[in-house]
Image (cartoon, rainbow, N blue to C red; front, side, top):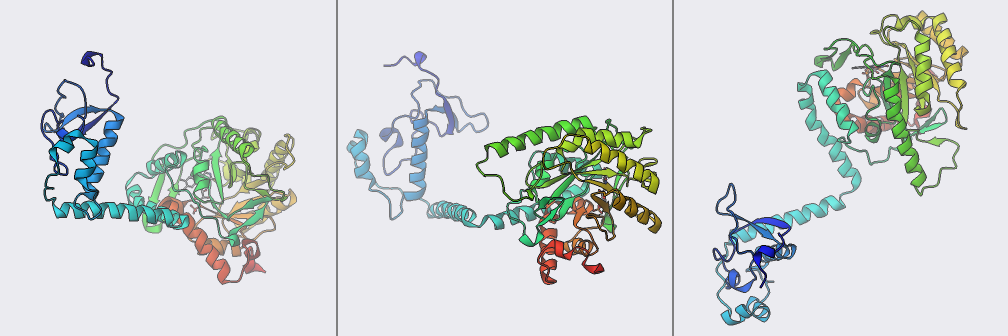
Length: 483
Ligand SMILES: Cc1cc2nc3c(=O)[nH]c(=O)nc-3n(C[C@H](O)[C@H](O)[C@H](O)COP(=O)(O)O)c2cc1C
């Protein structure tokens, strides 16, 4: 006999009814549980009563004892009284001496309702599990995106900047839906020698510090623009500085380039870049032989980096050059943002001569860096939506003369790729911008109000518009209204 003092403590504990030594459990198949099964524990010490339910006692159990309990409860719940039940008396008497001597006893009537309920619940669980596992992934993914809409009224109750912070944190930690459905092929396009699976992007200002690139791209945006990033960290304007105009479905922003600065952002993008390279190296998929690069530096989606200037900086072009030096290696495209009304003097850079000087310096900074064979990232300028016709003509002239790679603009046609941004909340809005000359389209406010569900909905509606009007691709529809 083992001295109880030398016994090892048992590794597991379950809540169970009092043990056979204290109370007799209800009989199973006419046998006393105490008689026909070994005790649940071999300790002589009486287990302490449960803290909240004194009728229960915490009983240390070995894993085999746990398994026995599960087997027994399953047997009780499923088979007792059912037409498939095993013959208890013979089965038991063969394995236990106590059973053999006790002989078969009458099975006490089991509450029929309970049996039915147990059966129904197990049936439901099995059917539910089977349905989810066979429901195609696309359907399931669609439900998840729709499900996120339930959170929108909750977000609407929060302060706008706090809600925004919460959304960025959720995306940064992967608490956002992941798009598993491939984009309709009609949405695919090639810009700057890169393949976009769809033309719908997230505009700058949402992920200012590149915290959530993976999560945001994973939600199904064709591209995500981080920033604006300033060379030095800066607080931006005092809060509150983001306001919802709910009746108009609009957001007023006077953030003033709050930014963690290029060093912090470079570290984040660098880490992500390294991770992506590792995944590419370990992936068994051989690289595409196609000349057009699939996806971008941050993953299957394209990453834009939007550069700003510090509020107190005297030399705007030096700020943008610093941004290029530090961040361009991680960017699929770069943006010189001179559109913001919240940084004093910024919009003056949109004047013909100032813009020319600025673009030349930034282009030179980018081009003197060493680049792999896929070359430097394209350079775009983001301009304000409310410029005069003369301003627009000046900007267009500079852009063409200096072979700028693109403009981010609210509405116009052009000979270089344009990203249409502002007021897009549906596929039809995106389609209008494309027909007006935009190759790509960005949105922000619609995402802030509609959440992740807006992404598949805009894409699906855009695909419908293109197909309805007989376009085989986005590219075919670009500028269609001006041909
Ligand atoms: C809160 C907020 C912050 C923004 N921050 C930036 C920014 O840092 N840099 C930038 O280029 N645009 C910024 N934007 C402008 C957006 O990128 C976009 O151009 C503008 O919101 C229009 O698009 P929408 O109508 O889809 O919202 C910001 C917009 C909002 C609402």
